[in-house]
Length: 225
Ligand code: ADE
Image (spheres, rainbow, N blue to C red):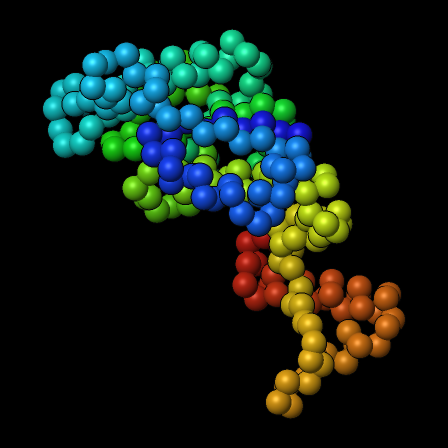
């Protein structure tokens, strides 16, 4: 069971993401708990502001430290967190090994950035891990938080029907996944590789491994080291 608290100024953006499919099933079955917190609820200002002008000038608003500190502290008063993660394009690049590690945690906070980012003091004093989902800039950290949460939750034992299927994902062994096929075995003359219809489990596994290696060599030679 992993609990993920997501702090955002756009909570509605995340609601539908967790209300469907594998994630919904995981949450309904108590494998995961995702709680979305509206940063505005923790603002102490009259107008519930969560951002302000940057000291020193320049374009773009900066997320203020007080609402974020209030929210994180109120969560920490209830439980201990393994990591307090900030989603940001200048964080460490998210990879499967990070997802594997985070899926073994009990409690995680994910803070979504917006505008020009958060006051640097939040990063210095509250954040324990900074994650980027790739070298491009999104308009907010919400989609990135959803990506990271999805990658974590599907790894929790019991979430996927076939427990072995997360283990055979691309990247788990530094190899891309092999091609897969389903019925019909012959679509307008385009046939499924004969070996997959043979029933020889050993030969099929050998073929899949060979395909994984070929595919990785062709598409992601960097993974082979
Ligand atoms: N926020 C904006 N862009 C992002 C990215 N690429 N990764 C994580 N958080 C982000």
